[in-house]
Amino acid sequence: MSDEIRAFVENFIRPRVQADGGEVVFAGLDGNVIKLTLMGECAVCTSSCGVREWIAAQLRGRFGEYLRLTFESKKRYFQDI
Image 1: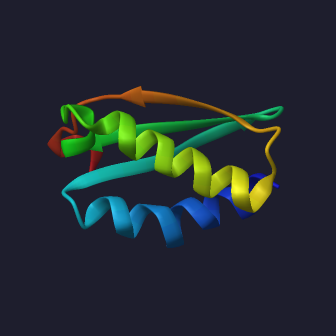
Image 2 (image 1 turned 180 degrees about the vertical axis):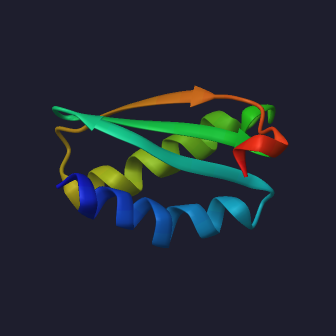
């Protein structure tokens, strides 16, 4: 399931977040907890709660309501590229 979630994040969610200057990275799956890292504009944007809610809705709609999500926000540095 981890590979399916990673592919969905990279191919569906990530391009839409990048279109607004943000970045989202799949950081792992631990049981039913999906770990994501927000970077770019998403790490500092005051409306990132809306982005988080949208991401959660997309993932739960695709993979099940039982999923939990955790988000880490971090600034993107040149070495992270």
